[in-house]
Image (cartoon, rainbow, N blue to C red; front, side, top):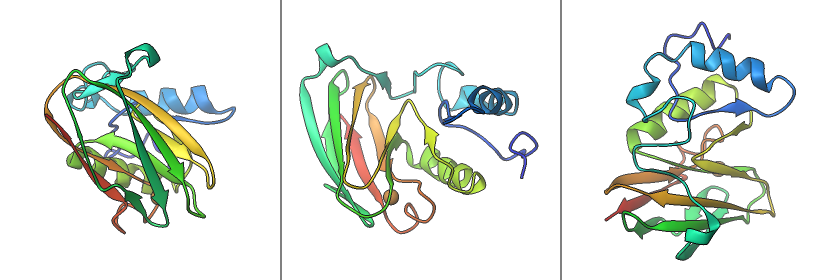
Amino acid sequence: MSISSNPSFRLIGLHCLKGSAQSVLCAAIFASTPSLGSAHKHSGESTFWFGHPGETAQVKRTILLSATDIKFTPTQIMVAAGETVKFEIANNGKFDHEFILGSAEEQVEHDKEMAAMAGMKMTHFNGVIVAPGKTETLIWTFTKTGTLQYACHVPGHYAAGMVGQLTIK
Ligand SMILES: [Cu+2]
């Protein structure tokens, strides 16, 4: 299926395919997303309604997560608005797993999008992909109070309950 001809395709962030086709696919995605502004402030930038990638020097707290087949531990995280947090996600399972930040609504949208992409690996400003046996880090500055989820969108995983609740107080 062609992504650019799919009218239901909406993004919660900037996504680019890894590999040599990257610039071509990114352009196709942006051309197809006139409603992108509703999901976050600036299309093509890394700022989301709940925050943005943070700087190492601002990190006040490290939160360790384990991804297994198929769940996250812990399943609930609390952070403060204004806080910069370093998430360290260890994949202790046998499958690839993602850790993606977003509202419940955004997660549902992203899950559809990933299904449409047939599980191709994507890069995200608001998350990481973690290979089995590896640990990846996401540094994030939370700017607003709200309720988010962290979720894995490897096909089938979100539906199977690979999701946690993140509260920004
Ligand atoms: Cu997963």
